[in-house]
Image (cartoon, rainbow, N blue to C red):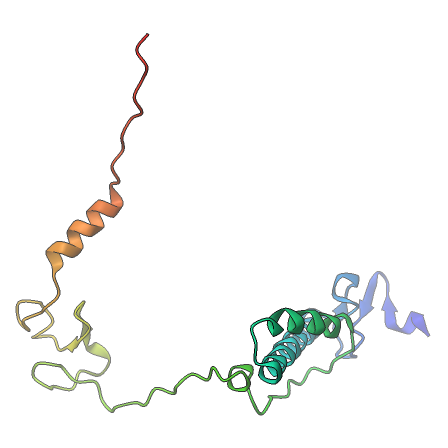
Length: 167
């Protein structure tokens, strides 16, 4: 029975995906092993975030990591298909990120001309067309002189030698 799984020195993946596994990846191929570790990490995050919601304190972080560590010890063969969860760990913990609403086509800040992908971002944070891309053409408020001085100061730190004791 074991000889059908083994071919020479190589062992077939325990998930029967057709690829070869190794002892370092718990007799799974690299793809199955990656999927399994990803699911274990997601389970840890979900367990710790649920624990945080239930307890509502910062000391529960330590308990959540300790209890989720026992979840990670169990090694269960996993299929290749990844099932998306209905709620991400960020939404469960209340740290959901806001979705950026697209405003429409990119336009030059000065003349409102559509620039698309050819727009130029200035250091002042605005987007400009080919005509208004230079700072003197759009009355830029960014202080280039101070920025250059700070960059030079960071690149060339002051070096002082230690005082030597006279002999």
